[in-house]
Image 1 (cartoon, rainbow, N blue to C red):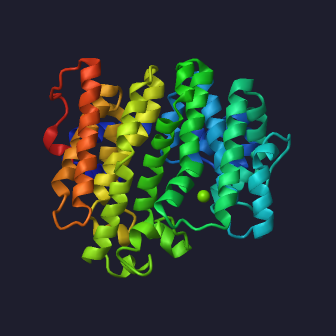
Image 2 (cartoon, helix red, strand yellow):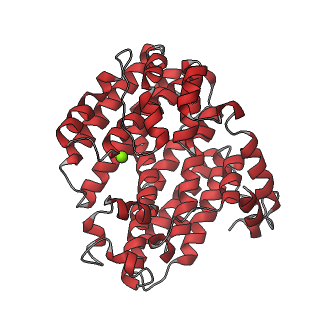
Image 3 (tube, rainbow, N blue to C red):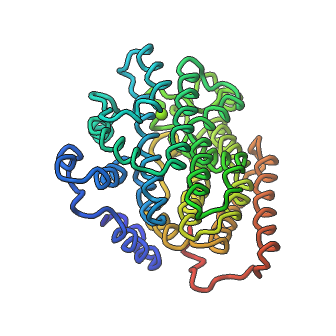
Length: 399
Ligand code: MG
C-alpha cells in the first residue's frame, strides 16, 4: 500500500481514491484463512469472505450492488470460480475432468457437495473444500436466479469441456473460447439483473452485446497475461494472430522489443477494441446506478489496461498493471454514462496518440478507435448531454 501511495504522490485525486477504495474493502474479521473462517462464519458470510479472497477486483464492485441482487451475483461468481478451478487444475486426470466439467452445474445443487485437493492456489483449494457452504446459499436463492446460474454453469462447463481437446487456433476459436468463459458471464449477469427487476426484462434478451461485455474483459486479460500464462503452458493467443509474427508463441518473450513482438501484441489489442462500441450500447441500457457501476468499472479498467499494454514490451517480461492510484480513481469516479464516456474518450485519444504508422494493423486499429469515439458521441446525442470538461478532473494527472 505504501508503494501505491508513493506512485500516486503527485496525483492528489488518486491518493484520496486509494484511501476510499481501501475503506470500502474487506471487513477485517475476514482477514484469516478460509479454513478458519469456515468454522466461525455463517454460510453467507463465508461466501463474501471467499469472494474477497478469490477475486481481487470483483469483490469491491459486487459489494455495492442492491442487497437482493448482491447475493445472487456473489454465488454466481463463486459457482463459476469453482468450475474454473476444475478447468485449471492440471492434476485432475483428463477423463475425470471431462466428467466434472459437464456435471458441475448439477453437483452444485447437491447438498454437501465439496471437493478436496482441487484448485491452483491455497484460497481456491480452501473454497472448494468448503463448497457445501456455497451450495447452501445457492439453494436459498429465488428460483429465477437459480435458473440463470444453472443454465450458464451448464453451458460454460460444456464449452470448457469442448476446449479440453481443442486449441485456440483461429480468431473464431478465440471468440468461441472467450464466449464460454466470459461472454456467458455477461449473458448470465443480464439474466440476474432482469430477474432482480432492477433492470428491465428486455436486458436479458440482449445477448450479443452482453457477450461483448465479457469478451472485452477476457481479451484484455488474455493479452495482458502473456507473461503469466506462457510458463504455465497456457496459450490463449490465437495462432491466426501471432502466427503472422513468429513461429512459436513463446518467441516474443525472448525478443520483447522486436517490431514483430510488438506488432503481435498490438494486433491482440486491436482485436479486443472491436467490442467496445457494443459495451457502450449495453451500458447505455442500464437504469440502476449500482448495476451501472458494477458493469462500467471493469470496462473502464480494461480500457485503461489496453492503453497501458499497447506497444509495451514489458508485457512480455513482467505483469503489467494499471497504476493502483488510477485504478482507484476509476473505481471511485465512474458513476454514470457521463463519467464513463469521459474516461473512455480520454483513453481512446491516448491510444490514438500511441499508434505508429509502421504497425501493420495501424489502419484497422485507427478505424476501431474512431468507431469508439462515434459510439461515445451517439450516447451524448441520445442523452442530450453537452460534452464538457469536468474541471474537478485534473487533466494532466490522468496518465
Ligand atoms: Mg480457466
